Structures are given as structure tokens and as C-alpha cells.
Image (cartoon, rainbow, N blue to C red; front, top):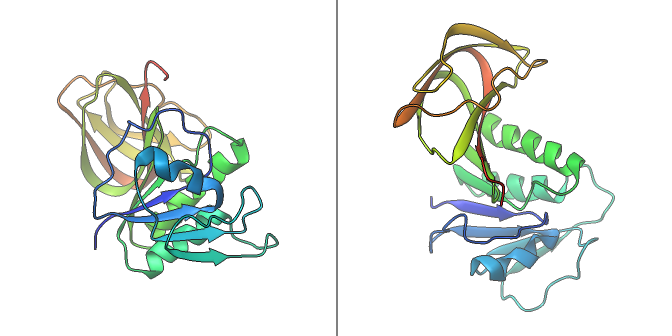
Length: 208
């Protein structure tokens, strides 16, 4: 299926950091509806408890309303909907940079996407976040960004090539952020993980 983009309600200053395909499926989670015009997209579904915004009336789409007293965050509700519809590429925007608890919850939601067989990422003006488990992957260099690798599991065994600081079958642990602020030295960084699960984070060197 085509890609699914989910909009959370965290503040976005610049709407030019990503181009959304015309055939993308759009879900706005609660006040994430405020970002639709900035990205120039029409929603396919709007859903949430609407405790932080009014129920929108200007869009001709499905609107799903939940009670505020619920176990799932609005973002998680939207992600579960995307997974139930069969999307295997789920991208989350407007989920970081506001409340710190919401940012951590967004990272946990990204892991939920991964654990349910879909490819996911979180994007904002300054960061792109991915998850990798055991195996080898290449990441395209962006010299305007730092390239950080953090363990999601108690420990991960990792080899890194194509960066300023390389590793060979090194053990990194969740309780020590040794992988922060690496830099690209080649056109691609190659990461081979033989144990564990990691966060891959591109972060702009000059914050917008």
C-alpha cells in the first residue's frame, strides 16, 4: 500500500522539511489537524479525544472520536488504525519537541510500529528517527546532521563503518549514550547489528 503519514499536535515551525506524496494516506491525531494546511494535505481520517482542539468540520473525511479516559494516546490510536488498514510504511510528524512525556511516548509508539511488522520513522524539522534490529543496513550521509546510534535493548553488539567514529563488534548499552553525535565520513554509513535493537537518529547541526 502507499505510505501513511500521521500528524500529532506538537508544534511545527517549518513545513518544508519533508515532501508528502500525493497518494499518501493521511491521519490527523487530535490537534495534529492544525498541521494539515501547512503541509498542504487533506486528511483521510481524523481521530482522537479532541481535548486539545475542537472537532473539525471543514474536512470531508471520517472523524472518529474517543473519550479522554482511555489507555491509548491519540497518536497510538492513529498508529493502530494505520496498522489495521495494512500500511507497512508509517511516518509520524508533529510528535516531538513539545511535552517531554509525549516525545518519549512517541518513541515507544515507533517501537510499537516496528514490533507489528511495519517500517516506521519519526520526523521533525531537526531530526529523523528510525529503528534497526539484527542485520546490516546502510544510511545515506547527510553532512548537515549528526548521526547518533543508541541502544534500545539492555545491550546491543554493533559494527559501524563510514563514520568519523567507527566500531567493530562493540557492546553498547541502554544506560550509557556513547553513540551520540557521530558524523558521516563516507557517502553511506553501514551499521551491522549482531545483537539487540537500536535507535538511529539524524539531528541537524544547526537547529532551525
